[in-house]
Length: 319
Image (cartoon, rainbow, N blue to C red; front, side, top):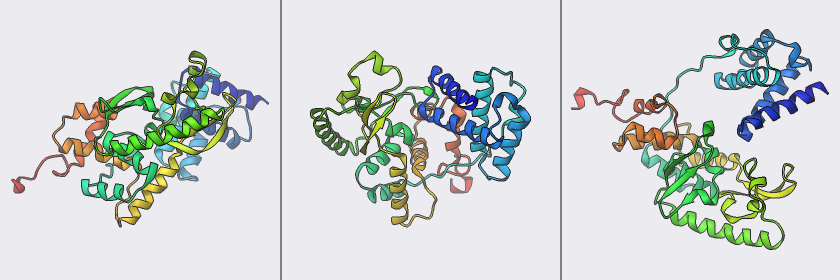
């Protein structure tokens, strides 16, 4: 019962700070695993050495990556700092793993076109925006109809990574396909409305602020799941967005179909977007804004993978 209460308190603390649902689910999952690792001992009775043992086990026995280990550490530091109220300032150096710096995989323009050509349906439209607008996969799947502005050629990302909003371009290529896709969704939405449905999940608080908005066309997801599901938060059957795995599987199948040797993922399209913009002569600050990076040093990694040498310069022998 006590551990159930700590999970409820954890969820409450996360929601008060307006963290994303994915962050909430991840933090809850790690805290539950930490409690299970310590034989259901209440976290109040545990300390930094118990956290160290858990994270060490993840790295040595579970073989998780440094990024995954650090996500678990973030969840536990949040638990002790914000929920239990313990001073953990001295814990950071003990529980953080050093993440190796790796260069991103980038596809050539011709390779991107070949992969997109091997895709169909909603996954192809998603992939087109990942490469054409530089979106993260989850950002793309959470787009609402109102976030696509065909007239100004813009895509508005709400509460992207780090809770920040930004605007990026809507590529001309694929606009007609996207408009046709939305027309089909609008017809289906009208049918849902006539049958008493048409509900969609809204960001926290908007259900109270805008009653009825959860049935409006503008708030519907651009890329929708074919299945309806019950949302316990609002007590309604809603139409959710397409699941990430549907796009990831379609992209992987396309990569294999075109015989590509590189291990490309959906996120590779975002890396390719940034690199190709820099190759095209756009300044790094512009690319930083489009990607939504807080620090330009994050964007600078793409200068190391340009087709002009290891550091973005041309060899003197080529001159």
